[in-house]
Image (tube, rainbow, N blue to C red; front, side):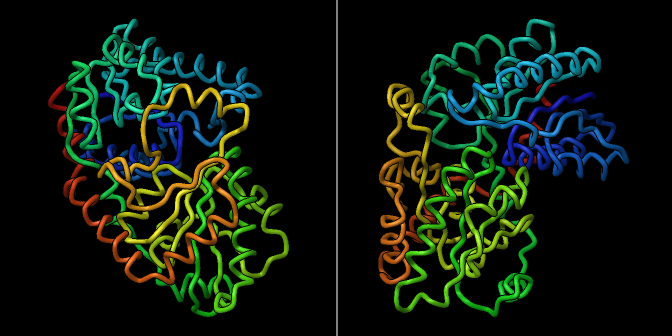
Length: 382
C-alpha cells in the first residue's frame, strides 16, 4: 500500500520514523512519501533504498498566533504544496502526526478528495481549541491516541479511537546512550556533574528560553559548591549553533551539543526543560527536572481564554498531580529555576519523591511495542 505521512516537528519525526518501521514490518511492499525529517528519511532509505522525503519540517515550525504572522505566506504555500503532493501520488491513506494547525487543513482536503485519513497522536483538544473535535469527527477516519487519560475524554465526546500505548517508551528504551565521561570528554571537559538544558525545537522557543536558562546557569555557577557544575544545551535538530551562540557567549561552563539529546538527558544530574515531549522523555530516563515555558506577551491573553487544563507537562497530566514543578511565563525566572534545581539536588527526599512519581507515570503509559502495535492496527483498519 501507499502511505503519505506528515510530521511537522522533531517529536513527530521521531514517532513517525518508529511508526514507519512498524508499517514496513507489517507491509513489506509498503511505499512511502512524507513531509517530515531526517529520522523518517533514514527509515525510508534503509527499507526501500531511496528517499521519500518531500519536505523537511525544519523549514518552518512556529508557535503562537503572533509568532505565526511573519511566516504566514510561506505556511500557506506549504499547505498548497502538500495538497499537490497528495494529489500527484494518490496514496491509500494519509497519516497525520500531531502538528494540528497544518494537519487539520490537510485532513479536510484529503477527506473531501476521497482519501482515507488517519490521525496519529491526537491534537490536544482536551487542553485547548475543543472545537477541533468537530473537525476530527468530520475529516478523520480513525484517530490513534497515545495517552491513557485521552480515552475517557474521547469516549465522552463520541470520537472513535484506537489506543495501543505510548511510542516514546520504545524510543527511549531502545536508544543508544553515550557514557557521560565520553560525552563530556568530547567537549573538552573532565567527568563532572552537569545540568541539561532543553530549550525546545522552534526558533521562538529557543529565543525566549535560552535567555533565562543561561542566566540560571550563571546564578548556579556562582553558588558555593556548584563551581564545578557544567551546563549542556541539547541542540534541536532543526536549529544550528548560530541559534544558541548569542546566549551562550564566551561562557566556558555552557556548551551546546547536537544529535545527543537522549545521552545528555540520561547523564544529567537534573534538567531544565521547555514543556513538551522532552519533559516526558526526562521522566522515562529518570532525570529530575523543572519545566519552564515562556510565550510571547501578545499570545498570553489569547492562551488564557483557551487553555482548560491544570498542567502543561504530559507527565503531570498523566497522573493528575504535580510530580515535578512547572514554572510558567512570569514565574519562569533565573532565580526560581535556580531555587528549584537546588531543591532537587540538595533535598534527597524531594528527589526520591519525584522519581517515585516517574515510576507511576511509566506504569500508566504501558509497556513496549506501541509503535508496532499501532502500525498493525492501521493496516488492519485499511
